Image (tube, rainbow, N blue to C red):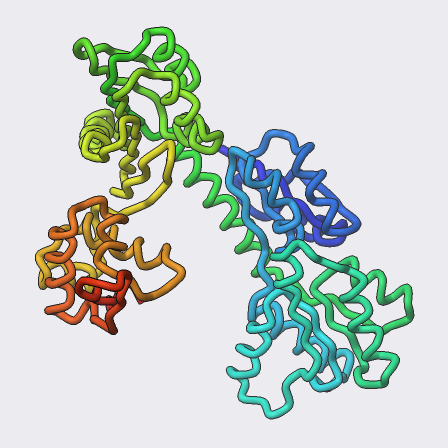
Length: 419
């Protein structure tokens, strides 16, 4: 079955991609052409049904973020990587006879230029490199600023050629009489990009079709349950007065998550209302994961809570108020070593690692960790002692939060899997 790929890019790029796609099996291209990358936003808004979106570069991908993230399908973009830079520089040297130090280059990530030069061990790297990542991420992109960067260097006599990653900049520079060349997107990179888009679409479809089973424990209103089941296209079975089971698909549940739908429905039900959904390749596997998720919801302490346990053993929740993620299974050798030495469960270790990743400061106290784990101070101190004894957490100081009483110890994570 063919994969329909919506490709968003400038006309020349689209022509190359359509030609290459004709040589690949089971790929159909829907072209969406822009003159400037900012136009990608409107193209995404008016896109026809497809399996995946492939952006010709990082700029149209970032510009369309608002509407792209609302799409019920995956999206990828073609990155300007070391292969593209190496091919472009080789072309400049061979065809234009321009030395690297007489070039001006713009691209979203300047590190790829440094990486190429580090590999070839050249003593004459490009001197004029403009990185525009910050402009894009802060939504302050200015095409004129990038054009002016090249034009000013040309007028000063500092460069002989502008090498740009943006088609619109290339067109503008030529109209101003500035010698310019586009960074080359090698044929192999385009083919790999299309194949990656196809793989992402196939993976998304396979996951969306997975079985999703939900156990709902609540003194529920039948009307609310029927409405909820209708939204996720689920069949409902009542197991007893307060326990119901719903059968749906992973795709339907994740569409609901994107719309923050659990909040809308849980708020309508009488307290307590706890839900556990599980994904799986079979009903039996999904039911088993749903029961584990329900047990977490029942222990959560909130009157309304929903957890989801995926086939990959990622636990998501508690919805509707939070969306933490923890691994209930991890086969990384160093993670297993930590678990074996400390005798802590994978769930607790995963929570601790996620705790470290979500904090702005690397330092924390036992109460900080207790609040995150939602366990008692004594339980947290026992966990910390095991980690400290084996060197996976180190005590780095003390803090006095009150004028009287004992100071609190301040800790820092020291886990290889965290680093």
